Length: 204
Image 1 (spheres, rainbow, N blue to C red):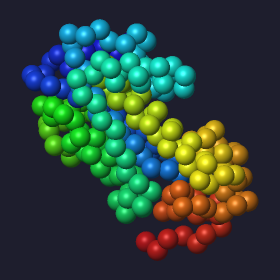
Image 2 (tube, rainbow, N blue to C red):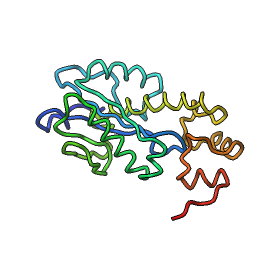
Image 3 (cartoon, rainbow, N blue to C red):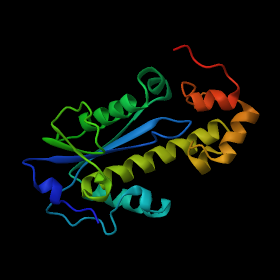
């Protein structure tokens, strides 16, 4: 279970940072940054968002927001993903989230092994959402926020099933793309999306 041992190894305020939505065929990529108070009990059952049910994530989201010193969620759009590539767009969303924290952090713990350009020193943590409580909290906030966006996109662009698969490459989503073609929420810079829609490849 994630705890605050990693955070305790650093001086000052430490935020956990994680993203959601790097893999889908549609929708933005989201990121969250969370500063937890070591003097407050952690929400019971706090864990990596991927091992939690949607209902439990929503419950923990509310608890995290209540106990956190500061939290923020930010996005990078489909257009920014096309312009920057998905990795750099995820980093942009992370930077936006960290910049929105008040008070600002002295250190960031980031899930994974890529050192993004953030407005404070960065420590990468492979498997961090299962080790660090603040990264786990960030993973939950990023996931729940993005899921809500995909539900809204489902209303705006019916027929693709965004509310069910959240833009990932599920069979029903791939079939809808082949049947309906892309909508503005789709990542047309992605080869997989263009192939499913019968679109020509982008110029290198």
